[in-house]
Length: 124
Image (cartoon, rainbow, N blue to C red):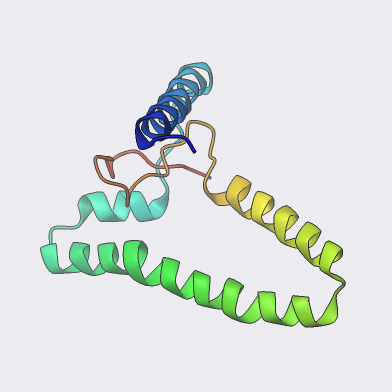
């Protein structure tokens, strides 16, 4: 069994590699134009509205997504498909989902992660 220091080194290395690739891609393709939501949030003066959006985006949306995909869709598919087909479908859907919403060229989709800046956006 590997010790936790090795695991931390690997995690740090992968995280560093992610940012290196994100920076290179950002330099090659440039920063995308801000999404309308980002522009609206930057212009918002009410702290209460900003806190409400933060709760919606960082807490409520991931919980609802997990309930829907893991609780409902997985249950329906596993009962109606052979196991190998089910696994293939889930892997493909996960790849498409992550590729569509989490991997915009430069990888700045980190609004809800500690130390990230909500100034950058992923653009469409």
